Every structure is written in C-alpha cells, then in structure tokens.
Amino acid sequence: MEKHFRELDEQGYTILEDLLTPRQVAEAIAALDASYSEDRVSDHEPGTLCTHNLTARAEIFREIIQLPQLIACMGFYWEKTISSPTWAPAPQCPG
Image 1: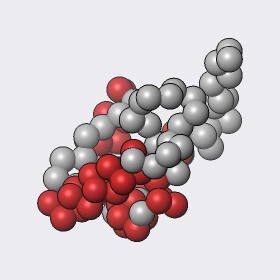
Image 2: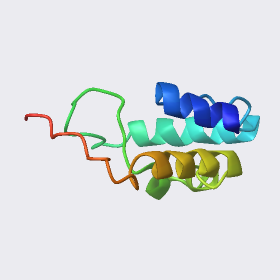
Image 3: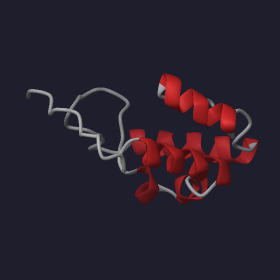
C-alpha cells in the first residue's frame, strides 16, 4: 500500500489495479446504466451521464467502499488532508 500512499501524496490519485472482481465490475456498470436512465439524474449538467450518491442507489457501491485497499487509501487521504491543521476546503466555484 505504500506505493499507493506515495502516489496519493505526490499526484493526488492512485490506481488500485485488480481491486474489483469481474462480477463487481459488471454489477457496478449495470447499476450506473440504471441510474443514467432515471428521469432526473443531474440538474447541474443536463444531458450528461452524471449521477450522485451511488451508495444509496445500489448495494454494489456499498460493497465496493468496504474493500480494505480502498479503505486504507481513504484513511491515508483523510489523515493527510482533511484532518491536517493546515487543510482548508477549496473555495466555492461561482455559479
């Protein structure tokens, strides 16, 4: 996990290769497709394939956010940013 923590620290992102099983990928894609077909997906950018609150939409997303590698990365990010005394939220975008 140290490689991923270093990448998060240096780049702001990391790729957790082979994190999901083929079943999880298929279920996540199906759940996203279903959410995209809803009448009201996003008012912010009409006509885009955009959705939100995935964990409320399908069990597969609740399963994914509990994967140990993902939890470790989220914990690392939390400690390095949000819980840091020097961290401040990004300014609000106009509009």
